[in-house]
Structure formats: C-alpha cells, structure tokens
Amino acid sequence: MVKLICGSHNHALTKSLVGHSYVGRLTKDEKTIIGDIKMSMVKPKNIFLTLKEHNATSCTTMKQVYNVRYAYRSSIRGNNSEMQQLVKLLERYQYIHWHKLKDEDVVHDIFWSHPDAVKLTNVCNLVFLIDSTCKPNKYRLP
Image (cartoon, rainbow, N blue to C red; front, top):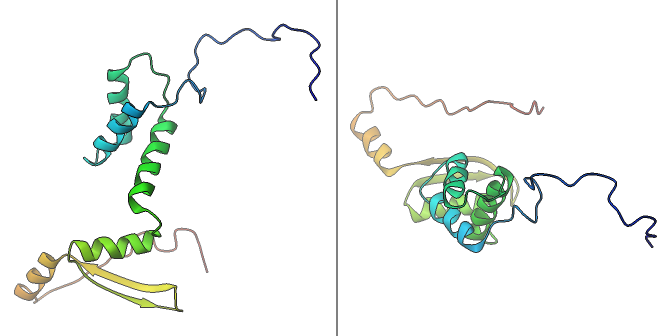
C-alpha cells in the first residue's frame, strides 16, 4: 500500500513528452500508413519522416515504428515459424528449393534458386561458381 506524504511533485514537469509510451502511441490511421508503406519496402527512417509530415506534433519514436513493422510482419506470417514462412513463399513464387533435415524437425541444409537463374545456368553452364557463405561463424559457435 502506498502512503501519500506530500501532494506535490518532487521534480519539475517535463517540457516535451517525447519518449513517453502513452503520448507517442500510434493511431489506427498511422498504423495503416505504416502497413501500406512497408509493403513498398520503404526504410523505417523514411516511414518515420512520413508520419512526422502528416502530424508534426506527434511524439512517436523510431522504436514504435519498428514495433508496428514487426507486428505487421507477424500478422502476415500468422502461426508459421520463419522457416515455414520461407518454404511457403518459395512454393508460392515457384522457386526451385531443396532442404535436408538433421532430425525430424531441424533443417541442416537448404537450397533455393530463382527459376530464371536455373534457365541461365542451363544456357551458360561452362563456368559456374556459387559462394553463398555470408559471415560464416558470425556468433563464434563451435
């Protein structure tokens, strides 16, 4: 139980409410704008600037823009995991794909290729080299 000793604040009121989650929350219209813009692959900083152009007095922060983008992506994905979503998209856009499982539910190797890349490979197959190692052992795992 809290006991009130003095009814006045022990600090001065802030001049700006930037950073306060309640004041900086996004309206439904702003969330819709973020969803529409996100589909166009616009960078978060440009989404933030667009929101500021629509409402100059908004106290929204970049963190809130990131949170809405994450929630939007999660709503599109539904209950699928990232790997399930990847396989779903590969099948939807007719990519050639293959994967090898380590156990029943652990993917050990995965490969995918755009159908046009396969056509080019069949036409020009004299020299073909793929190096797809991106930051090997980035997290210094054994």
